[in-house]
Image (spheres, rainbow, N blue to C red):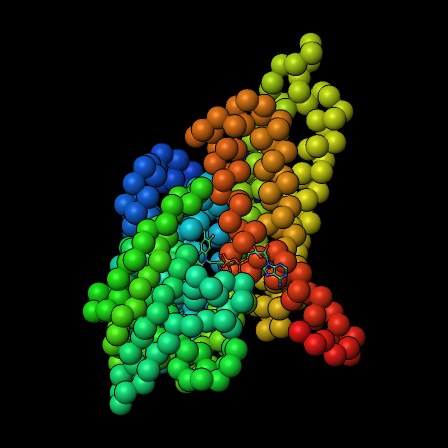
Length: 392
Ligand SMILES: Cc1cc2nc3c(=O)[nH]c(=O)nc-3n(C[C@H](O)[C@H](O)[C@H](O)COP(=O)(O)OP(=O)(O)OC[C@H]3O[C@@H](n4cnc5c(N)ncnc54)[C@H](O)[C@@H]3O)c2cc1C
């Protein structure tokens, strides 16, 4: 059970409230008993289920291509991620990656690219992935080395990508590669690469503390037609950043979903656990902990839905999205840790929901820009607004 009164906040329209409540009911019915023993199979099943139920339609833009709207509704994406994360972290992952993996096509795809990929992403018939990071280019994206040599109407990709979510099960990857010698973030272009393209191999499957499909990809003379380029030549960095601008806010929403679930579990335990002749919740130290958890959850929710609402209003959200991700992910880690503490031994028991949340939340503070990167974005933006010149 979750406190849904936040849905009355002015950030939302009636369709958002309806969406959140319908999805919550769907999750209770369909996600309660999903097995994650085989993570690849579970993820494929979840994508199929989410597609069949119509939820993935929110992950792409363009009604003609299966999307719910012609432009991405950031508030809908955030509400979906928050709700899925509250019920099942892997379901949130499956939804999020369909959006992130196809986001560049939604934003920059040609009509032919949108026809070929978006409808299948929305129906759950194709699994998408976003391949930006490399072994030596994570936070420092501009240090990217993976290259694409253009020969006539073909791009030939050589190099590596790592930490690629859905790596190994994806049907296509949006791959960022250097197409000319321009330094830093210039000279990077984006390409759609089908998973069965010769020259693309899964070099390694990576196992992380909250398992989901993840891999290092190898490109050896991998030839793709130039018609698979997304955006113009050299515009890859812009394509990547515009995609991340939408999905960074949704990472905050997922963290919020994990934190709400932890708070629910902690409240239930505090209200029912007999202790010292009363209940755990009778103790004032418990009440203080719960108060801090609830305040952190509301702060994260306000920042998350402010950023989502601003983006839907067409306003720039770089600073606000960074604030939302920073506060929601760091705050969720604290809320979940408090829930583990309140549950005592149960909280660290393998398979218990708060133990799962404890593992689930950790990587959200690292991917799509680590906390320190969000701090830099906010700090630089503040100084820029003040008129100061920032060197780095
Ligand atoms: C579970 C998971 C899924 C992922 N999925 C994808 C995916 O689908 N596609 C994709 O392209 N990538 C993906 N990534 C990669 C992710 O985006 C990178 O891990 C992230 O950008 C950090 O890069 P890195 O791991 O190389 O760490 P590094 O860049 O080496 O950073 C290490 C640490 O340095 C600190 N740091 C970074 N910058 C600064 C700074 N300016 N000042 C001070 N400290 C700083 C931070 O604490 C950071 O965590 C995923 C990662 C994980 C863990």
